[in-house]
Length: 294
Image 1 (cartoon, helix red, strand yellow):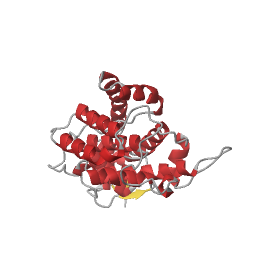
Image 2 (tube, one colour):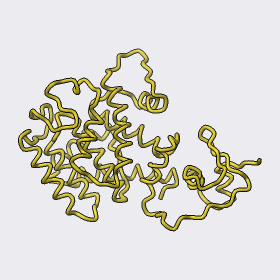
Image 3 (cartoon, one colour):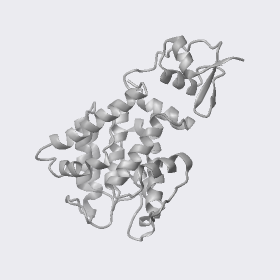
Image 4 (cartoon, helix red, strand yellow):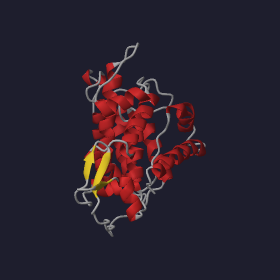
């Protein structure tokens, strides 16, 4: 049997190569076989018919789900996992390099050159991969107290913190936060404040980027967990962007000073944090365009 590549099929059927790969992953091109990262498509295959239920306005979540399920390497799921895990963890003082993070995601191994690496840095990187999977799986359901706690548990399970008697993985803090430049809620008020936050957020529909940032800022003001609040909050913003068809964004480690400044003055001047997120959003938009996702 003669085969053609996804690139060749794209030229024959006047579609993008990315679309051909998606149709192959969906099983909509009979006989297509994946060898490594290359699809071999029977030359006699017919052009797939576009499903009327497909939407061109917000295809990203569906693409992420399909690439996750197929463990497709080299696509936007692969890029999101490595980039967001690296940058979000670095903001939280994780010391793995981008190269180490990529190697860990792709091979489930870690290499160490001439320096020591904290076990927690490795564990939290692997956990963050799992958190992004959790977001992709559950984004359509929206935020809830159960989902927020599930994200925290997924992020902190197996870490040094998880073995401390006073640190409750997947549950709200028992002591006031330390080391944060911003004030936060006392432990006895967290449960009620989180309920109020979720009740208020659910009334805003449809969600805009401004609504998601406001939710994140109120979440950060509460700081419901003993640690890991920033990463959980950034994962929640990813989830809500995906659910509402808003281009998501990854806050880079180099943005940390201006990002923290934007957090500190949010109630006086919102434009600082918003502009940082818009810059990051513009960058992610270029990644989507690279993968022909519009």
